[in-house]
Image 1 (cartoon, helix red, strand yellow):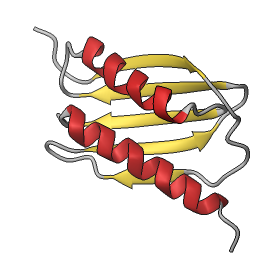
Image 2 (cartoon, rainbow, N blue to C red):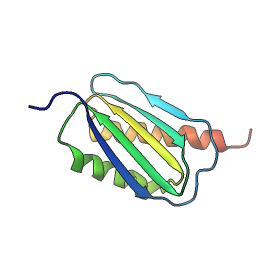
Image 3 (cartoon, rainbow, N blue to C red):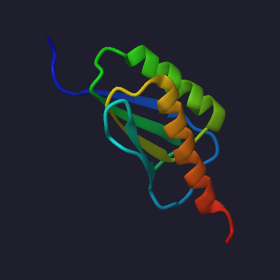
Image 4 (cartoon, rainbow, N blue to C red):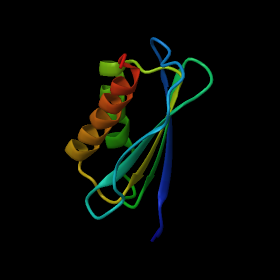
Amino acid sequence: MDVGLETLNYDFDGGTPAGAFAPVLVGVVGSGNLEVLLEPAEGGRCAVQVQTSARGFGPIWQAVLGDFQRRHGLAGVRLSLHDMGATPAVVSLRLEQAVAEWRDQRRPA
């Protein structure tokens, strides 16, 4: 039996480059929850790394992250997710929170 965290890596086509921005951190690493870190990255892709305690759910992560990327088309970003058994609904919520904070940064003061 495998123990410990599983690391999953995904790479998505991007849309409009995100440009320069301060990293965004939302959520908390705790039971049934997760933390999302959104950072600028080189290139026109959206790279995602998931570290999760729930092993064997790669296809579900692929579906949730693919849906997120189809809605937002992020480019030039890196997402790091640290998961402690969050449901797909919680994952989607945290991703939406990260994008909302990123957008708030970009609004003129």
